[in-house]
Image (cartoon, rainbow, N blue to C red; front, side):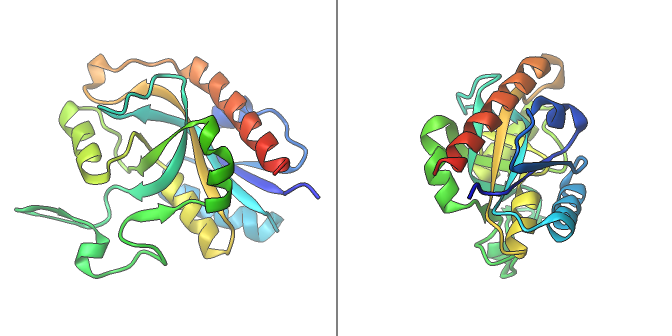
Length: 212
């Protein structure tokens, strides 16, 4: 029997880029972590059960990542960027504070191991940071890299994967790079091309998952 999938996007353009998939429900959750977690939870409770959740959308590449615009990126882990405390000596994540966001260490939300193993050879892989404020300056982009080691940033991934895990469902984050980060005036964008790449990436991923 084919696995039943829940695909969560932030905006309509991302959902529209994904071709109809017979065994998948696509939800437009809204931008940001609160919308993402709430929409994921609501969809699972109202329309489940699902075998896997996919957070799909566009993302910005971070400095030094080597990831090119329109490339598809699969998260090896999803990292909350903001959660923690900033002191005169620097940033400390939840692990350093002695608190827990969930059944995972620090700010790193693990993706579904089995699905990641199935897909990892088909995409660029690396940590993706989940941010509340996107990087529109060079200093901001470098801080995301320094704090998380991520190759890309987006605004929903960790929240979708986290919410799914709380309800006992594995999840992954799959993104297509739409832009560079850093100085807003110097950023490069190819949104339409990235949306086309997203649609192809989701098709590739869902076909591989269905035949696993």
